[in-house]
Image (tube, one colour):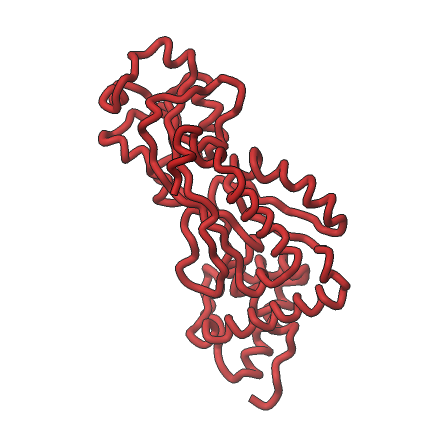
Length: 306
């Protein structure tokens, strides 16, 4: 290698590694796909190595590409931090933060909190991805995310956000026209609302398997929002955490002693976690989780929560 690569070429490398295709990287960078290809060719020539395996399906990192990736990410993080500091944002956060959250959690819990945050930081903007799946942090789909499965590899800051329980709920109308539920064994005669089983965003969402029998799923969807509405309309029983249940009487607890326990994790790439704008959103979610046990547990369980 006779010359050091330009930082802009490394940006092109990062976006292609994250997108996997020239067209995807070009959209992220707002340039023509031929520009992306030319920059990657130049970078590989300067480094004297092949960074990507090309195929009809797209671009996949080689062993040398994987070796370069953490260094390029560290340079990106340092660049972002420098720009943030030079912009005078040590005290106030500014810029755009993309937050990935589960659909109902984002809509019912996180969105209302953002009003005060944005008032406090007038130069901050939030892009909230309320998804029926979990945001992909590896390809920088989001700057930080709430998920059931924490990243197992890569450079991330990860913390357990909260332990919570899925409880059984049903609509009064459904319960009136179906057999009474006095024990877990009675549940076998009932209909259920659940996730589409071959499209689960995480194996942690297969909590109905803990019923001890194969449930009769009458309605399934990719997201919990649709499940809440279906259960409220009387299509079957559902399991959900307390924060997902509307406070309007359309769904009531069923067999309170039965539940499935899970954990939410909060994660961000290490280089992005250092940014002021990401950190203020991180701290907001941590404060939310620590000070609102009723989101995660029903009233009788809060005092026994670990």
